[in-house]
Length: 166
Image (cartoon, rainbow, N blue to C red; front, side):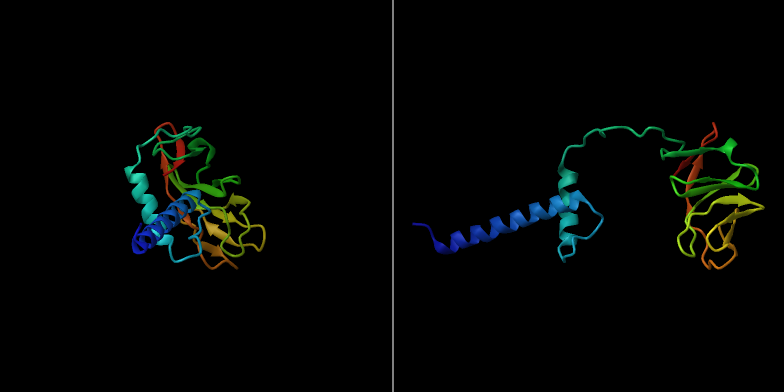
């Protein structure tokens, strides 16, 4: 006959293993949340341990276009006027060229109420919703009601003029 204490111990261990396996799958499924529970850290560390011990595999598909730093190509330097910029609506970004050969990239989402900026002219990035304006050189507020600058994004410019997210 089996010992009831050993049977109970096996049941607890099996339940714990099943919970960890389920948590790891939830952590890999990724909605970006923490799972809403206190086990998120355990799930993350378990997933990291499993992925570290799993064999590496090739990506399913390579990105369509990569740039200088291996990031996604977003524009060509020739398309960004000196003293102005180019708005990339789909990416919600704006690339500027404050002075010749100097490129900057910012979010195109206004910090006032989240509208997308719609033009770059006269040295500012302009929001159509409430009239906020931001400096092309550094994203700083040039005119309110916005009070915070546009968030800067890191970019790289390849010798061929391709501008990519870094």
